[in-house]
Image (cartoon, rainbow, N blue to C red; front, side, top):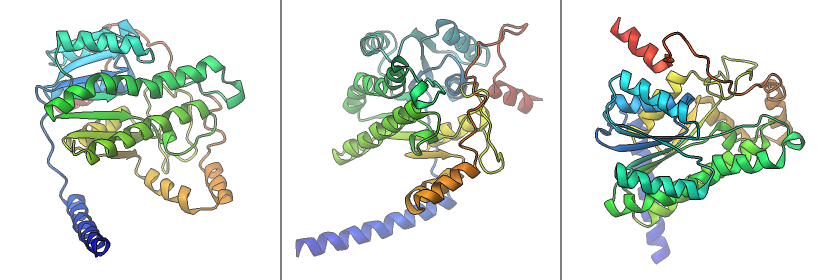
Length: 325
């Protein structure tokens, strides 16, 4: 009798949540305010982390920027302040070093306060085939791309639970959902980051900590320099993502408490193919999309070029200028 009742309750809930999902497809959830929230962004010294910092500063957030590159986060801080941001705190931190993360986290709590939105964005990539990847680079990939999430979650989650308020954001990759040629260590570490965040989501929700939100972001390659030299065979099907589009999509997902973000949306179709197609069919699709050649000219992030003003105009700044014109 109990099993029958549970089953009917489950079916009722599934039907209700299905209708709710349809409504949200037509009418998106309201965006929450992040004004006054303390937003910590790792890997904020360049690329996507810098773009996210600028976006959140426009929304009135208090920014805490971490990066192993001191000059990079100072540059991001200057860009934020130049564009109207006021409260920005910078800290040099190697996110792959557990003790350093804990030490800097204590410093942040003392000097700024309890972090309420944590964006784990720091990452590294080798771009070499499996047997050509040195052991130390494999370890570095896991320390920065995956284990750092454990250390930051452990450092800041207790205060979020105590306040019954917070948001954890995992910037992973499409390579963290689909194994990728030439990126075995990167892909494995990003799978780990996704699994960590997903498991933590279920753990928190089943413990009724539903006001701690989690967002897992899995984009295709973003044109920030990290994957410089990579090429996509059919850009119309699988384009390299522009930073402005990727950043705004991520920010919108955080503001709407969205759990999963895949960019571009064709990746949802790829996820279905992965589960339904035969192995030979998957390999045929992979080759068709150019997964066997897209890393042939991989260079990775190059040293930032200095321009006359000494200030790099990011896509967010360029977009803001267009609006003002």
